[in-house]
Every structure is written in structure tokens, then in C-alpha cells.
Image (tube, rainbow, N blue to C red; front, side):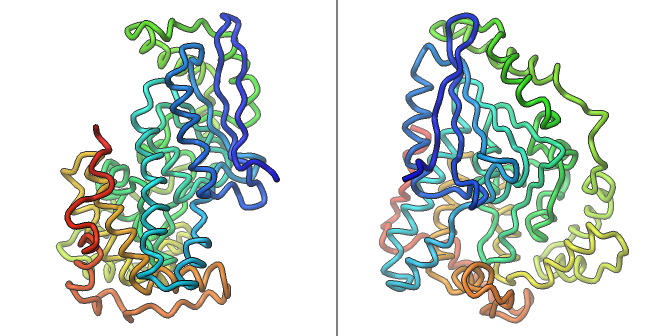
Length: 379
């Protein structure tokens, strides 16, 4: 049986090592599975504590995708097999372990480089967003497309979408719009643009770099600068494509300027444009899940002043509730199971979604008894 994540180390000229983790599900576009999460968490912890490891490199197998999202088909199968209430514990464990991994990456003390080549969506962005060095290439395509499946931009989306310039994060969450490398740099979801052909040269440069003593806490911090220097030397910003988000930033600000979710959605959906990027974004929102639109709006409003720990705690509640409510399973059915592309959402329009329906998605399950499973994240 093929191992879901491949681990190896690369020797450096100074006798130290670089940890390399490769998501190994190329045919599934390296979609993040329960098994992958279970392998990554202890290995990252081991590498973080190992003084011979100077940095970590995370990538996906093949050339098509770093990680195209979470393996939500298994969630759907479990929900349909036993019913949403009986599947609640499984759903909770699925999201809880994924968020613990995402948080672990956010707090990883050593340089952690994510090679965001190809498709990086959903759960893949969750892995990438917290890394210290997030690299995109000419083939990078990032998105949080949950509007199409009745979920919402989780895996820390509340955090990184709120940190995007202006209200561009809100627009991206509502429309599930694909963004390229230049967009990712502009909205703060990536740090460096390196052409894919330079990947081997980057790894060689990291192996020959002069690393600082990991055992010395003050010196160890300097290793982040070592990685930044190597990546900077291999950047080719002159090859960056145009950034649609930057080009349309003022319009995005106008379209997302409002005091209620339904008003914003109506304004975006009324846009008449010949621009293909904007047109696709509008079309996706029009076809998307009305409940999700409210969840996106609410998560960003409620998450503005939350800590990173608070973000993941809130998102765990909402993700479990999405499993208990009908839109998420229906969205997965239409996209991945029957593949008819015709989901039957619970509500016909964003304006028709009741406030109490939305509030249910932000209310902890009664079985938790006020004890969020992620309350220990920051300890």
C-alpha cells in the first residue's frame, strides 16, 4: 500500500538536515486525507524537536497540485451511511485534527517552506497559509471554493481572508474566485514567486547554505533569514502574471460595501462585465449555496478580533454544524458523487435564509457542554 505522505531528509554541507514531506496522492491531486494529517502531525513535531533539522519543505507529488483540498468525500460517505447526528463525532474528529495540524504549522518554530505549485485549494491553503515561507509558481491556482459545496472557507480562512487588503478576502470567500501567483502575493496568501524550473536550484541552495545552530534559540531564529535569502535569490518577479484582484480592487471594494449579506450578494450578482475573471466569480456566486454566503459574511464579521486560537475554535463549531445541516452533504453529492452539478440548496436565495438558521451554524453542539475540543490549542 502506498504511504499517504513520504518523508525524507536532505543533507546540508554543514552536517545538518532538511526535512521534506511530500503529499503522495497525485491522482487525487494530493487531497488532504485523515491519514495524511495523522502522519504529518507527529513528524512535524519530531522535526521541530530535532536539533539536526534546520528547516522543513512541504510539497505535493507530481506537477498538477500541491493540495487540492480536503478529502470531503469520506465525510459525505460517513454522513450518508449513519446519518448526520450519528456521524457528528467522526466529523468533529476530522476537522479537529486538520485544524490542529494547521495551527501547528502556524506556530512551527523552524522555517517551514510550502512549495505551492499547481492547484492549492481549501485544505491545501490551510496547510500553506501558516507556513513561514509560502512559495507560488507560474502554475499556482489558489481558491477557497466552498461556496459551491455548502461549506465555507475554513482551515483558518477567517484569519487569512480577514488579513487580505480591504474587503478582497470577503469577495474571494463569497465568489470562490481562483487567484494566480500575483494575486496570492497581493492578498498576503504567499510570500515568494519562484518559477517551477528553479525548484531543484532552490533545494540545492538550501543544502549548501550556512545554517545557524538550532540548539541556540537566538541563532535558530536567524535560519528564517537564511531561507528568505535563498528564495529571494531565485525569485523572478518580472515573470509574474497580471493580478486580477489588484486590477479590480477598487471595484471589489465598491461591490462589498454594505451592511447586510443579502445586499452585498445582490450587488455582486447584478454586476454586468465582459471581464472573464469577474464574470466567472459572479456566476459562481449566483449558483452557490445561499447558506454559505451568510456563513462567509458572518465568519469574517465575528472573526475580526479573534485570536488565531479563537478562529479555529469558532470554525470547528461551524464545520461540525455544516455536517449536521443538509446543504454541505447536498453540495458534495452534486459535485463529487452524482456529479450532476445541480445541488438542491435548502433555501432558494440568500435573502430567503433565516437569521436563526445562520445562527445555528455558530452555536456549539449541545453535546459539547461548553467545552470546545480546541480550547487547549494555545496551551
